[in-house]
Image (cartoon, rainbow, N blue to C red; front, top):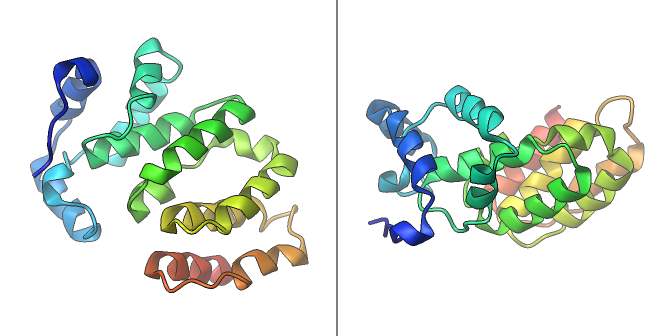
Length: 186
């Protein structure tokens, strides 16, 4: 059972808004796709609705407080957190927020939904972070690094040596192996 934080620790405005968007049937569907997440921690909010909310509240005081409240109680809060980070316009801040959040990412859906737009404009700095994330021992930090490599360096910025980043990884973790396979398939 998910233990709720006290009202003083919890951003009630965001929580109330998230529960207004709840779709219980969708929560059940999601729980089948993400078996590593307890069913009771899934509110059941569709990603387009979460994206819309993230765009609307990004940069607000409310969003800042929410991002600084970790860990979250619900899967959907983690999804919103990742989407808020993705809205960041400052590379250094975004990178710091990703680093703070990745230890709390515990499933493929949150990991794969995060896609900071600011990374496209900072590929020189990003490749160093990708190398760091990809070599991490935490499953979803490693997966995120490979995903960012796939998202940002399989185009005109591709270099043959980038293939070594996923090729040299030794992991028995299913979700890391699947991302490596996805990278090479792409």
